[in-house]
Length: 268
Image (tube, rainbow, N blue to C red; front, side):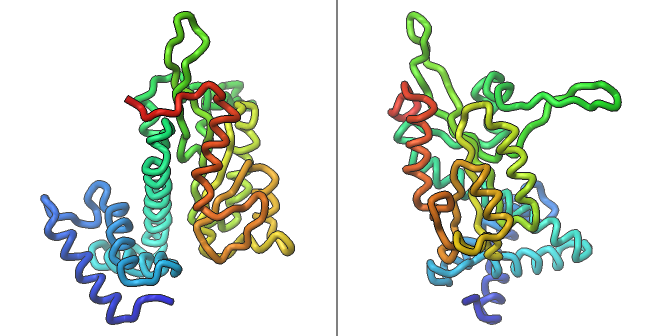
């Protein structure tokens, strides 16, 4: 089910009006505007669709329509802009839901940009050394770490000093389009860190098949991730691929496995 053409026109007009009343008025080329458009279009569409329906096809239509109205971009550039903005918005959605549900338990979900607030040690721990053989030079590679799961522990020093530790990493994908191999590569490359690796996907195009009739993407994700969480209620679940609502309890189990002495009270 999707919105009728009349409803889409109403939402489009309201979306443009919201942009105009921002201070200063928001245009599509303003900093942060693409993500803002996705988030607000999503809210407006969800208010009009049943909770069981996927709002993103209509959000994509609205996003591209605003883009066509306010820019001279080609269709290909608009498509690339949508892919980037929707992915960023999805990461924000996942991070926000985890924060709301788990902050009281002493768990924080942070982006790569937010990681700097916790000192350099965690980022250094998660960064992989790599070497270019042709010129015999080294560089540091940042994996596909969209969301880091952090907690505090008492530490082992005397007297005990509170330490911040990472115990899980989540990669967020709205869809794959043959990019599942990249996600699996990073999951395998970071396995020796000891942290749990999860992937969250919308599986909008039903790219995962079923456990009985799996796609190549599903088999790879089942093999290399500790767990895959799916927001699409129509995706076939199995022991490795679970509904998104189960992510909260799973994250709590991951923390218990990786940081047994974790502090389970809210951060100060």
